[in-house]
Amino acid sequence: MSQQRPGGQSGQPGAVPALPDLPEATVARLPEYLRALHNLAETGHDTVSSEGLASAAGVNSAKLRKDLSHLGSYGTRGVGYDVALLIEQIEYVLGLTQRRAVALVGVGNLGHALAGYAGFATRGFRIAALFDADPSRVGERINGLVVHHIDDLTQIAAAESIAIGVIATPAPAAQSVADQLVAAGVTSILNFAPCVLSVPEGVDVRKVDLAIELQILSFHEHRKASLTSLPATGPAGGLTALPGGLSATGTEEAVGT
Amino acid sequence: MSQQRPGGQSGQPGAVPALPDLPEATVARLPEYLRALHNLAETGHDTVSSEGLASAAGVNSAKLRKDLSHLGSYGTRGVGYDVALLIEQIEYVLGLTQRRAVALVGVGNLGHALAGYAGFATRGFRIAALFDADPSRVGERINGLVVHHIDDLTQIAAAESIAIGVIATPAPAAQSVADQLVAAGVTSILNFAPCVLSVPEGVDVRKVDLAIELQILSFHEHRKASLTSLPATGPAGGLTALPGGLSATGTEEAVGT
DNA sequence: TAGATTGTTAATCGATTAACAATC
DNA sequence: TAGATTGTTAATCGATTAACAATC
Image (cartoon, chains in turn purple, orange, cyan, yellow):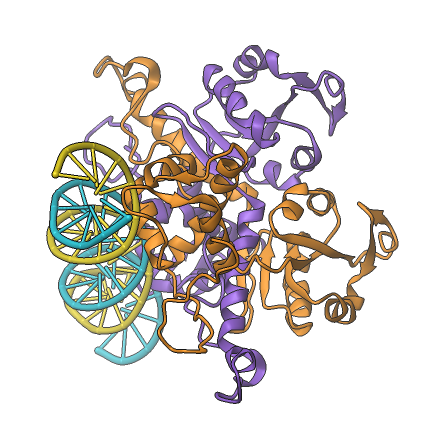
């Protein structure tokens, strides 16, 4: 294992290993595998089978092997995967060999919590700057960082080599913040504001909407209830409710990603 | 419009309108349409075309029409959709005609912020109870709610008719909390802890992992960089960098949902 | 060699999309 | 009627899955 650079299957001498063009669904699962692998490494596992890693990551083993095969994988038939090597590979593909600098805009309720979220630091990121539009918050110190005014974004983003912008403002402010991030050269945005952002081509936006997650769960609650309580709402008797309230939902556990 | 119950296409007299069995991808987009519709209603629009609603929700119009057709939709050819009616329909399908009670477990950094998140209240939910395992936090008052000890969950969940549990604990505590939620009869869980939960059939789990979102963006940053800066890392000249750093990424804007 | 497990194939499934007939 | 726009069809695309040959 050691320093060996993953992805070097290409025969071209001196060529930079091109990043494989992974399916989006695979990209979304690689971080999950990475987290599971770190857990395994910490508990003293040097090697893991596709079955073992899949169950630690909550997927089936066929999917896991298919995903890893896109990396040009380095498993050993009859043995499994080398945990440390696979961590290296996935971190390389995800671009986590460098710690990426994150700018967080909006230090209200949610932004405040994100500024203090330890999980960012332990998983490859550095919150490098905080911003807010409210002058009364500028200068405030959160978790060792000073809150800057949003108008200083361009200057500070350049100085700190910001790679990713996180928007935690109210919805009405979000588009303007996105525009400012883009103008400052940021090409990846994580948006917590409940609104659609319009950005130029080449800029990636991911969205996290907490209420939407609850609404999706609400649908499934509603559906489960409509399956078990139909007779109760109808005029008279009929089907017996299923024992224990268990059911035949299309996608029971671990819906979505 | 008015009180008319949506979903009544079934000819069976006296039958409760069965919930349509929607594709998961459609379910995940309905809340987005709902948010856009509320915006339209607030800005005085009575009617909207599939084109108009689609662009407000950030999808294409074919997808929107297909999604709405699963509801047995009520658009008018040549005119569009009645905004108020469509809001009613989607809220009905998502089970938002009743305000659902949410229990939040873990009032640390993130949990504290979630307890105060106004977006839950405005979009169909009521945070009904807070829990923590740390005795020193029990009794604390957050946003008008007292923090209870996790051991009181079963009793309080029943009293408050908790429909959804939100886990905002550290990862090592999450599985045990999930078990307690399930034991208390909760069948929908939103998990913010970075770990896989195992739950019985019939229980729905959705996961929000903030670091994973950043890692997915990191992959795209890495890929964009590998496209434009290949010549710089190679031995000598070669291809010219694309002007403006724009590129041919597979999925540029608004990746994922 | 025998047993274990990967990487790949091919079949299946679900989601997306463009095009257009139906119809307001 | 003419113009607009839905709801549906059918083609395409991407993701999932089981099975198994390759191979350690």
